Length: 494
RNA sequence: GCCAAGGUGGCAGAGUCCGGCCUAACGCAGCGGCCUGCAGAGCCGCCCAUCGCCGGUUCAAAUCCGGCCCUUGGCUCCA
Image (cartoon, rainbow, N blue to C red; front, side, top):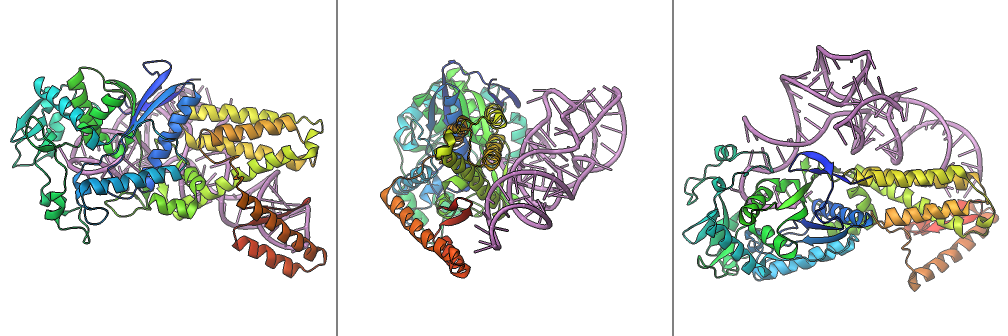
């Protein structure tokens, strides 16, 4: 069974075959560090994280690069709020992004390159384009000449004529309306940041004075938006890479322009597979900073925790859109709880002495094997994380049925295999925290105290003081401890 | 207008590439039963879908073809 992915370039789901059969070069278009990251960004991160984990599981050595756009008008617009200069504001948000990523249990990318640190590479790429006749200078700015690149439009399936019909900037120094800036002369114009400014930000004039500029063969200026990704992808990976991932809102113009400028410069394919993460929506429209309908990653982690969030973000495949609502996040919460209970139940059953009874439950063993096959098939089918999660939910059912039906005499090997599957797939691939129960001493102490309270409660129950027993249970619940009475006495979880 | 992706039960969402095991998965919500002092969890069972509309191809279509309606995203701020 081999991995198949949906490639925007061809519009088809095709077998995944990296250039080097042992490794994968993957670039993810990261964000512009001008706002706190929201759940929509987190959806992209988590899916890319799972893609990388799965590629590694398949045996590939994955080189994952994810950029930060730290030079941008929108960042300048924040000067005075989150920093005293463009560079300062960018640093502030880079730190925030890294922190948010960590809180979501993401594996780190190999490199997080920043635009501000790659200006020499950007300049030399622009020079290459000018020299080869694909770009031209005008008043200190440099533009890419779309008519010089025959395949322009192949990613977004448009033609230069289509695009020309849409554009209408009259004052332009560009030769063609679809031409785009590789290098922009001068600093930042206060008019350009006006629409992004918050009332409490510094005055536009003052903010623009802090904008970074660099010397170039065309005079002082700033890099254009699209060229950075080409330069950084080539610098940290190669001129041709295997996978380029990004949000679907980037297909045009950003990715289209990346393809054009990169391929025009090198004469080679820029990326073989273009994967686009569909957007997170809330009440019928996409979640975005500019629409202001977002939930920040930090707030969401605080409120729901990383596991619920990951379960939610993975509850539809990356290639399908997702809906955020109280209901959908609530469902994710229930799913994660169910998975976790199933896992804990399997672990507890394995730990019980009766697990050594010689019991073999073929139904359980077959179910576990089926789950493994289903999970693998789901992931290989264009990283279908929803189906993969469903397989794990089936595993939970199998464990519950077995434990319920074999009171005390368990199939140790079957359960062990189930536990391993939860850890390997749920933990290792989906990044959920199975088996990572904290051993910290304060947690252990809290556990001891809970048991003490439960002992008291058992006494009250034995004496028939149910009212008091229920009070204790309610109070524990208020503290975040869930109590369950079972045949073998009470159990609890935090 | 142009490009792209979608329209499946109360919600959410697989399945559509490669037509038949789809009398449509998993989960949430709801109902009944077992268990329980009660609750929760779990288990068993039930409820809710002629798969946007109309035609066509076929022995057979949610799945293929054509037309139409609607929604969402992009069309130089955007994951």
